Length: 230
Image (cartoon, rainbow, N blue to C red; front, side):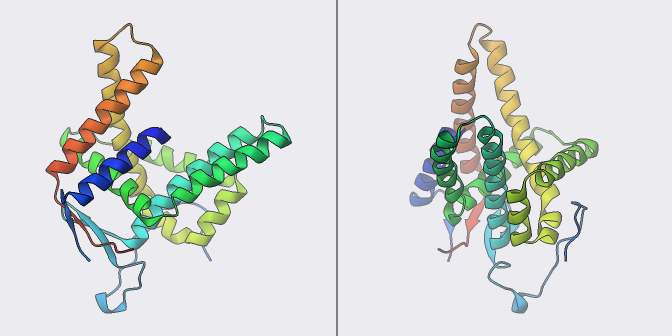
């Protein structure tokens, strides 16, 4: 998955350079659905400023940072799952690895790429008439809550970002992620049908390859305007 992420980032960077899209300049404990706060343009903070538009849908700098936060949380959960089975010496070596992975998602360009990839592929899923039933979405929200409750590092990261803001942004993010996963699952299912004798590793490789091709095609077909500045 990390190799695929690097490959997609490279694709995103190439498309940016070649002009394939336009560039311009006390919280509740549970993740209950809340409306996102709105401010007048004059009262905008840097976090509220427009970062990117995808098919007319606007995303702020805060949205971009939120996608980075979600990736960092996944890394923290993977770190915690691995640490319990390692010796102290092994843990020290792996901590360096996980720190390096997490630091990537503190970079605004990688945060932006993650948002664009997920939202673009979610659009494709909707074009295919995929949808996420409300009960499945709520189940994912509950799973997210359980993971956060079981990890102090995750709690601290959410508190630093702002729990109310996470509450407001979580469901749209999870829905987009689940729709993107529907695309991946469909690709994998088709490959297993077409290549019944393929190994799991071969299926995984071919799924990643087809996903990259599909993402590249989707990027060529959508209207995308980037406003985020370094």
